[in-house]
Length: 282
Image 1 (cartoon, rainbow, N blue to C red):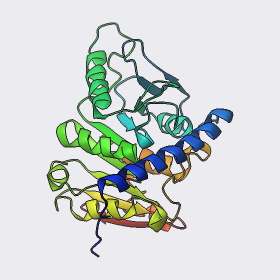
Image 2 (image 1 turned 90 degrees about the vertical axis):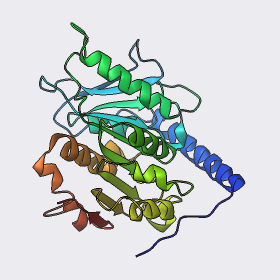
Image 3 (image 1 turned 30 degrees about the horizontal axis):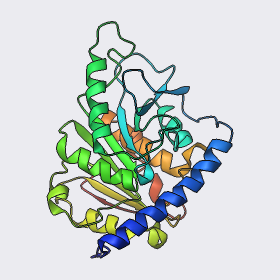
Image 4 (image 1 turned 60 degrees about the horizontal axis):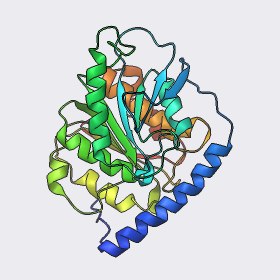
């Protein structure tokens, strides 16, 4: 099926982003007012802003086994520079043995750009080989993951297009605001799209991108009817946290059990409200 991207002028795009920013800000008030939620993964989690990585929030499992763990770079919705907006969602992902580096420091104001992710990758590489450092040998730097919600998804696109280390991409309720085939052609890693149905402002754009990737790229688009904000602010990040967690564990760690959410028995295909399309997943 052929889908057309939304045609919008610059003023319409600005209004749209401002509207999303206010909507997300309203969600943030509820998040900061709510108690911390327990995670469901096998590991405890903590978050911190490392002294040598200001303007970022690192979510990490506290009792994971020794050895390198998958790293996920995360871009916030509306490109907000506050790494705690998605605290429960990202803590849940970290509880399954994934280190998440979110753009933006705790309780920070302002906005981010892809440079935050670039700096985070440099930090991860340096810390991984720092003799005697707290993070020595903890990161899998040969293959990393990147994802983001809404505006953060646009940052994830930019990051994935220029870093060969990227082995998994998550474009979450997002899609290019304008048709940039050059950027799509630069994506070489398996890519996951989550879209919230026709009520999601990014729906048509995300579908257009999925249909215009290079034919050889493994890709999946998982659609539900939950709108632009999915389940990010549900307990433990809801189903969206499980979808992204399994995507990262499968594509970065090669975990066969995690792959069954998308292929084989395709657990996600049988969940109420979800529609899944795949290409080249094996």
